[in-house]
Length: 301
Image (cartoon, rainbow, N blue to C red; front, side, top):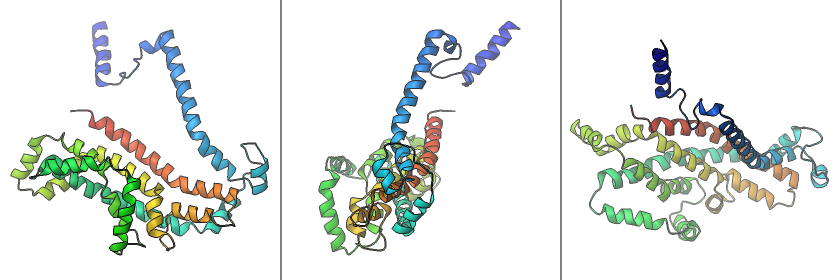
């Protein structure tokens, strides 16, 4: 009975129920428990330091201009959401929200498809001259984006593509960092899967769309997170392309509002809160998906 109980308990450990950085048996010792408490406290302090600016900006939005300039307290005197409503209506930021969502949605699709296709050609198809093309891709990572913004903007103007979202979508589909991420992931694919797909009559495009992408969910989620963050928080290229049009994004709208004489500090605080809400929500949604995909992708059945 004891042996059977031991074996049953051992099987639970093998299955992963009690596995982890610290085992259940070790966690009962005083030294390990003290170290575990210290790590929890340290992580809590770091998390609080990271979250504190967001909390401060959100609470500062409940203050009027006089209270904001004179009070040193973090907590406002009253939680009046009408001030946020007033700033929302004053900035007329609803259309800018829709513009940013359009940019983010299509930028993610563009980043996954075009960068994935580029990496697919370099990692799996490997046509003639792919080594030279791969070297050029890696070399382009040495060029700072601030240097390339001038010729990029000139080409956009020559092609008469200004005043709309198209340049922003194409820029997301030509990201060297995304290509490198995809290429490193695709190179780990077993060649037997690709060869079996070709024997079944799949074309190169069908292999990419029906085999490669469905098996690349972890890296697709990573690229999507980077693309969302980059498309939402990008300012320079949207400002050069969309400034003065009805297609201004949230970041461009916040800058143009800050240059107006009617802009006040309290309204700027509330507008910053409006700009932070969508990426925070999307981050928490994709963070759970990212963690799940990374864990499951490292387990082989």
